[in-house]
Each structure stands twice: as C-alpha cells, then as structure tokens.
Amino acid sequence: MDYTEDACHFELTEIEVSEQQWWRIGLETYAAVDKNYARIIEDSPMFYSDHSTQIGTHPIVWVSAMVAQPGFIVQENTMLKVPPNPDYPAEEGRYIRGNDYSPVAVAIILNRDEDKIPPDIERLIRTGAETGAALSGSIQTPNIGLEKMICNIVGNPNIRYLVLGGPESEGHHTGEALKALLMNGVDEKKKIIGTDALHAVLHNISNTIIDRFRQQLTLIDLQFEGDYKEIRQAVWSGYQEEPVQFRDYQLYDPGAFAEEGLSGKITWRITQPWSEPEDASERQALEKAQAMIKRLRKSQRKAPR
Image (cartoon, rainbow, N blue to C red; front, side):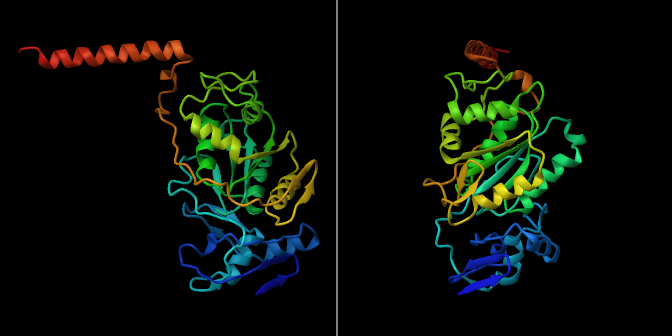
C-alpha cells in the first residue's frame, strides 16, 4: 500500500517488525525540504538509539513511529538493504547513530578541543542525524580519528556517501587528508598519498579495510561551509530513489555495497600513542627489541634457581 502525508511518501510491503528492530527499518522516504518540512519536524516525536543517544526528528523516524510499531506489518524495502556487521559501530567517538539503513554518513571537521565544541559545529552534526544520516559526528585527526571513522563506516554496507563539512583542523589538515585518502589511497607504509598533513598514517587498520572504505563511498565535499541547510539537503538527496541534482553531484540511494560489512577496530592502545613507530624501519627495530625481551624472559624462566 502507499502512504502519503504532505511532504512524506513511501511504499510498504509485508514483513514482521520486532519491538527492538522497528525503528531501524529502512523505509523509502521522500521528505520535501520546503515550508512543510518545519511542520513535520515540529510535530514529530523524539527517539533514541541503542546507546540512548538522541537521534532527532527526521521524517524517517516520524514515519516509522506512525506505521512501524511492534508487530505492525510493513513493506520490505525493494532496494537492497542489509543489516550492518554485528560489531557496528565498532569504535566509540563523538557521533550520533541514526538509521542503520541510511546511505549517508556525515563527518564534520573539529578544530577545537573536544570539550569546547562550538554551537555551529554541533548544529551541523545534529542536522546530519536529524535529516537521516546513519552516522553523524566530528573528526579531528588524520590518523586515529580517520581510522575510527573508517572502521565504523565499513561495518555498514548501506553507507554509500560521506558528507564532509566544517572548517579545517589547523595543524592536522584532516579534511585534506580524508580527500587525499579517497582519491589516492596509501603507500606501502600506510601513509596517505598526496597530503601534507602531519602523521597522516593509518598504522592500525588493514589494507582490506582501507580499500573497502575507498570502494564503498562517494565523497560529498561541503568543507568550509557553515550552512546547516546544505548538510540537510545533501543528506536528503542521498536517500532518494531517483537521481536528484545537488550542486555538481547526481545523488540517489544506490543500495547496499555488494559485500558484507567488515568488523574492524584499531589495533593498538590509544592510551599510549607515542609507542607507535613512525615508519617501517622504526617498526622493525621495535619488533627486534620485543623479540629480544621475549627471549630474555624465556631464558630467565629456564635458569636454575
């Protein structure tokens, strides 16, 4: 059956929705960004994720609240959507988790201390979540920050677009590094190719995860723009069934990536970042030292007392 309410429209077919899963169902929605949008947002209820994080009042959530109650029969999405990896999102961070079946994630560059996030940055992040992004948060560094974001995104094959917004992170050049990563990849030392960002090295994730991230995503570059309405329009455009023009991009929901979500976490202790070698020679020297320590400990255990 069809359901139409002013600026919202979607089609339904039958699947059973459990109490735990109903709000996650990926409904095809069309939320018009016009004078009706404000009324829809104003009238819609608030919902929370598994981590009790407010995800806002996007029409996807509003429509789900009306029709996808526990036990209600809704139509299965005809577009290919798949459950994320069970570990998704694998890494903690400063982000809001929204609809797992959304094709869009939002990353806003943070150029302040994490306890001093300005209101304009917070508004951009919340706009991403409230407009239907699967994940919307901030990113600060071109190494650990990028690695954590990458691990989270590759865990959800439904995410096909990354909207980049906010200023540049002075000293880190995180936005530049992210764009260079998607365009050029990494070298044999896992340093991002084509960026002057300091320490833009992805030591702690595998090449498989890096390659998946690059294959799965299309970047929507809105960096250096502070207008939350542009973030909203970019996210909205990304989940349309038919292509729509957003600036120089033709955007629509292409469905899930063809391979299952990956489980990935950064592999070294964040509490000791200074222990990570800068290059292959330092890593080799560290491995030799660790092997020597291991041999010494083993010989001490065998020595007569």
